[in-house]
Image 1 (tube, rainbow, N blue to C red):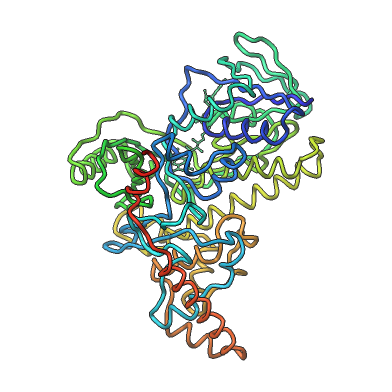
Image 2 (cartoon, helix red, strand yellow):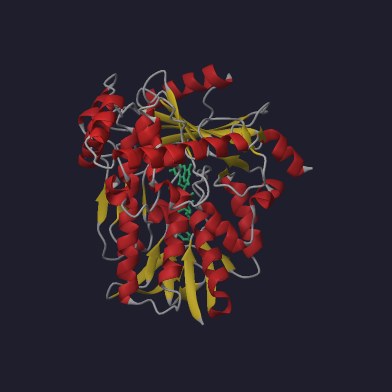
Length: 485
Ligand SMILES: Cc1cc2nc3c(=O)[nH]c(=O)nc-3n(C[C@H](O)[C@H](O)[C@H](O)COP(=O)(O)OP(=O)(O)OC[C@H]3O[C@@H](n4cnc5c(N)ncnc54)[C@H](O)[C@@H]3O)c2cc1C
């Protein structure tokens, strides 16, 4: 039996402990230590469809999540005012999550003015497909409620210990043991660092920190929950750009989770609080009621798995939450760790492979988030900086969109579609007006197999439009109410 020690009972600690225990069962003993006086970060409410890898491992369905908690369903993200006075939708795609969307129909539909958004979900609505939950979807969750729910389910399988890790004993870049305030010295075969921004274990080991402040300078967030009685429940997260960052808005139970994100390079805390206060007053008629400001360093560790320690979630790094990738990264990290290490041998080969996949994942996420800032706005110091400091990949991708068209081979660090399919990139690029109809037509004219490309794309387009129309939607609120009943 291998012994695992997990530090932290936030979303990462619970997901890591749960997936490890449910996969290896009696082959492992999992002890989870947490510091009850150090609260979990208590944000992280918008997920991606990858959350189901964890929920499936726990035997929890979407139906359970709605019945037992204040969960709502998310079909995508609505981006408002990224180009002022416009909005666009990035929807999840239909079945065949990793494959089908490599062949986008947009090369036909954009020049024909019939582009219809993503493969299944094309616009921000307050409805859901009528049929069950067998389509690609994510969830909006109340983090605290979710943590309590998962903790309860794991109580009998995992040892939960409220104790503070005070000293990490390291030898030869491996953790020998940890000294806890009450439990004393504890040793394990493997350690999972889920200690949040503290990075308590990983920062004692030999791995470099990659700072990404120059690419994505947002480094502060002010979160606030707003009680709200929904007449209609949005089936999406709203990401609304401001003149110095953006605001998230997530519908959960009888409230919205909101948060104001900005960069300390360009905006003072006072200014951010004032702007957020005005936004809250205008939108919800309530003012800012919190003093809390979350401060973080955007970036990630080069190796998340070092020696006998794996850093998961915030302890391994953080990229701003524009595409809700926090929980996505956690689940993928634990899933990849388990898949590569199924026989519990912790091979050096598997460690390197894991780090390679994890690194590529972080880079792909950074590229895609940077793409959202390709607005060419110059209406504030923040936007001027974002426009003047585009990453090389964004500049190249922008050129390809403007003068030709894109396919799955243009996704840079995401070449293996680690995170999003081509369809996602097209939705964002189209939302930011990066395509030129005439250029696409000219580009197609240069192709010897133009007719074949167009025929295929047209068929694909017609098929997806048909599927979208076939799928009757009913109000989100009605579905939630019927499950609660
Ligand atoms: C502003 C913001 C918005 C976000 N929005 C989203 C989103 O919409 N979607 C999404 O997927 N993700 C989002 N995230 C990321 C998400 O919040 C995190 O990935 C997730 O909550 C996991 O956090 P964690 O468990 O790694 O850390 P935390 O929740 O910080 O937990 C750390 C744990 O470590 C324990 N601990 C610390 N030190 C010690 C010690 N010495 N001894 C014992 N225990 C210790 C603490 O007690 C705590 O239990 C957001 C993050 C931020 C900052």
